Length: 423
Image (tube, rainbow, N blue to C red; front, side, top):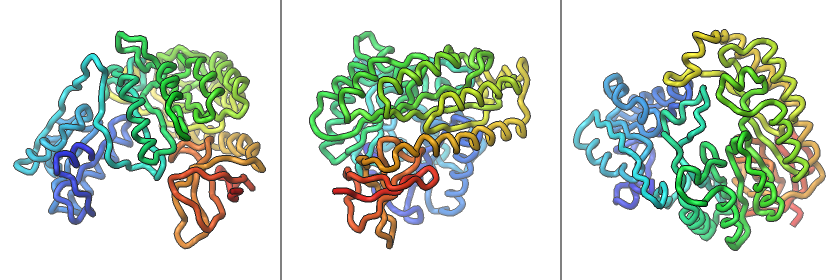
């Protein structure tokens, strides 16, 4: 969007008034691929006067094949040089069937992204990507096939962007990467995640920093000291552990084990008693036995994560896990679904129990939006990452969206909180 604006191209409008509709696609798992294709075809059908362009990860991985099989889509643009989108759209308007998959252009200063004029998040919140790609090579993951190897931004580039966002009214910075812990390891410098966080700590002003996607096997213990010493760094940790069975973890290419994961959870909660932990499980992995799944259930009960996402295994071509279906055995879809349902049912009780400790406490929240025609606002506290966790529903006639407010949590309603402002 920023590149289009800078080139004089961009004027946002409703779909029926657009000359070009860009669908930002995902190619990570099969359901996401299908949704990206169906969305592109739906827009072509509903808005025949517009040219539909598919951008992003699905285009990056399958652009040439999709171009042959989807004549309804006028162009396919990869995910690696967003700043080149304007020239690509000029060519799309002149013809059809354009496919453009430019390579990364990362110099010695590190990988850079264009500065964003507009944000698509709720008021006061922004995602800041500090690295792209991944070197971990988990057997089930197609990220390296789609996004390539790790490429980090420089510390200066990230800190400058955060400072600029804060000056524009951003109150919550969500640091994201496919693996935050690996930040800086691709470059011959001493910059790493700890140094980055320390530099962010030197910025003035009141804002939140939330750390998303911390690879548990290489969790930097120094992060606990930074979070504990500066209240702007939220005690919220997203640790995708995937499984607990040693056999499944080994097949996945993960170095962690159930006990090492439990030990990490214990260390985090010992250092930061108010810590909130989110994790991710993957069920139905090739060769997952009833005993493996029973061990995962036991681990879930022992870890007592505040939040947990559960996903069914998707065999992605080009990954080691795709080939493991032949050697280890494919799990029937019905079995996978039943296992996922069991994990989700158990987690509902765990999450509600973990959230009860906040009832009656005071909490700073970031106000996101007003519920129309009601004296109610939707907000989030430190236990709530954007879009994936619960919310705080605040009873108030007047609040400012995009700003902090102090509230008292009066009750838990499912996985959400109800609250009243206290000043």
